[in-house]
Structures are given as C-alpha cells and as structure tokens.
Length: 316
Ligand code: ADP
Image (cartoon, rainbow, N blue to C red):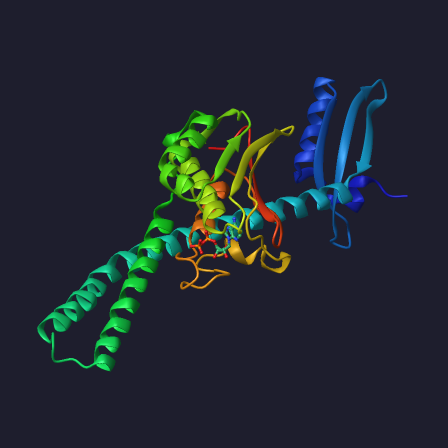
C-alpha cells in the first residue's frame, strides 16, 4: 500500500533512479547491477533489466546478492594470496642475498684460519709431538670442510633467474657435455652411459647441463659392486616432458626421498663418500626455476631413478 518513494525517499538521489529516468525519457533498454540497502540497513545486490513498454517501464529485478558475495570473497582471497606471494618472494630474495653475503664474507676469515695453521705447522716443524700434529691436522681439516660448505652455499645462492639465458636447447647436447666432462670418471668406474634421443626445449642451458652433471656424477659415486649402468631418457606428457636418470647403484630407502633434496643433507658421511650434500639441492633449485618438479624412485641395493619434469612452455 505504499509507493516506492514513500518507502525509499532517498531513491531519487541514487544512480539507479537516474538510470530509470534516462530509460523512461529516452525510451531505451538497459541492464545494470546495483547495490541496495533495505530499510533494516542490510545490503543486497540486484541485477535490473529495464525495458520500455507503452505503460512506462518494465523492470525485472533479480537478487544477485549471493553471487556478488561469493565474487567479493574470491577477490579478497586473491588479493590476500597475491600479497602473501609477494611477501614470500621478497623474503626469498632477502634470504638468498643473506646466503650470498654470508658465504662470500666468510671465505676471507676462513682462509686466514687455514693459512696461519699451516704456517704454524711449518714453523714448528720437528718440535710438535704426534698429538699436537693431530690437533693441527683436525683444525685444518675442519677449516677445509667449512670452506667446501661455504663455497657450496655460495654456488647455491648464485643460481638465479637469469631469464635472458633461456633458449631453445637440444638436450642431447647436454648429455654429450656431461659425457665429455665425466669421461675419466666413466672410464675409471667402467661405467656405461646410454641415452634415448631427447627433445629440444626452451631451458637455461648452463643450469640444465649442471643438473645432468650432478645426477650422473651421483650415479657414478653411489655405485654398487656391479659396474655402473646409467640410462637417460624422457617421456612426453601433454604439457611437459618428464626426464629420468636411472642407475643400478646403492639405492635409497623411501623414508629419505625428501631429505636428500634438502641443502647439506647427506645419507653418507664424508669418510665414505666425499661431498657436501649440495648437489641435489642445486638440482631442485634448477628445476624449480624451470617451473618443474624433481623426485626419486628407488630400491635399496638395486638402484635409483631420478625424475624431473620441465613444462613445454615456461613462464618467463
Ligand atoms: P652429496 O653427493 O655431496 O652428498 P647430493 O645432494 O648430491 O650431495 O646427494 C645427497 C645424498 O643423496 C647423498 O649423500 C647420497 O646419500 C644420496 N644420493 C644421491 N644420489 C644418489 C644415487 N644416485 N644413489 C644413491 N644415493 C644417492
């Protein structure tokens, strides 16, 4: 029993009313969304479809509040996700800068420790007893190990997203490169390295060479009693290629599958096998720079297969 104007006196000031007036005067149709406050002050959203008819205007009003709320929530979520991603990226950049500076600046004092220890050993030659010589030896050994770790960290933190270096690369050349670099090791271990034809892809060639080098070196290093047999190949998926480097070496227990990709994590100690535990962490970082994934399947005593995927289209 009321007119709109009685119920909503402020209606005349709204955009909706202006649009209604325009449609009425110009006799044109219009579709628009409008928010609306009910007398109890709750907000709602309507989609209004206005059609001029001889009697005036025909208005179809649809309540789209639910859809609008869901859309608003989605937008808010997206904004907060983007904010989180930006925060994460800047904290990653800071961490990498920290790792770089720390490892770079640690080298100098470390050099001093080992060179003065060696000097001391030379000057005291003949005056040191066996135990004292051993103490110096342990100290030099510790400094050498720390040097290797610091250099590994430096190498790790230097791997960056140099987007300009991504180019179409024949991955057979990468394996050929690895074969050349490891020629001596392959001979020494009486190993066989076979590979099935690999595709050409847009990748960071130097980093992918490094990745293959690390995986094949490990396949030679963690060999079993049998002569190492290493096979490299790939399978084509819809949006990516999955590569594998398979060996017949020591193998790894399933509970360590994640651990081995973490920086400085090793399953063998330095007296058994030399190394710093950086090789697979570098592989992981390289693959993540290519927006891919790396994982392992293995059986203790039988061998391991390292898989990694590289998307056909890399978001640069
Ligand atoms: P590093 O070789 O310097 O220890 P990596 O990061 O390359 O560092 O490897 C981490 C650990 O994963 C190694 O210490 C070793 O225990 C294990 N590992 C890596 N590759 C293989 C492999 N092909 N077969 C068996 N174990 C492996």
